[in-house]
Length: 258
Image (cartoon, rainbow, N blue to C red; front, top):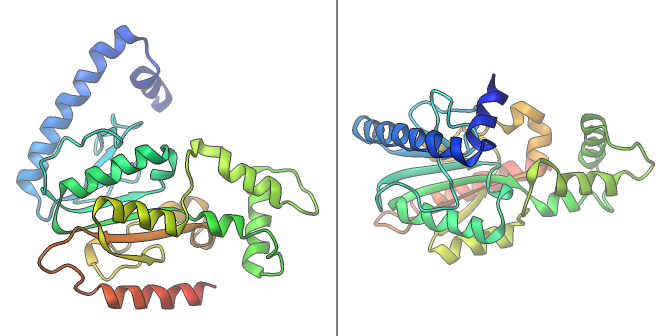
């Protein structure tokens, strides 16, 4: 049934789309109006898929027909007022759009966040994935290579790194995989400050802790290996409060992970 609905909404003929898309926008307008009236703080999740969060405005491009999710094309201007959101969260979504589209998304995140508002993004870490080369003695790399071959049905070779990396770069509609420097530069270019990297599930901000769900699909250990999580703030009166301790705790967690 899900596949049928998805086909009708996104792979239908232009004639059907003329009738279907307006219904999504009407539903979005009603849902957003009700959410902004009833909830505080205001929290937006981009690319929720089936992982909808309670108390959040859950959005997705492919699955807006779910009862708790509305349609949002994240690479286009968001249908929200400037400085209207307190938190924005997106997990394993930005790598599915091109680099310039990712910049457009980050720009809209910055515009719609209030001063002092926070953005949290989880996405694959290019350096971690490419790091499987020359690191086969590490137990976590051995486990990741073995898991990738078994889980994705890749050719079993004595040196599987090439197959694992190619699969990761090309599969699931990946368009652009970031490393930390590139993601940091992209955030700073939009005006974000106090950029810190964390491990999945951890944050000094209670509203941003325990949000990630990708580990439920592939396993927490694998998710921690291949993912990076970044938090950034829109400058405001209290910008930076608590972020030093966040950076320290995240660094400690990352050292333990390794």
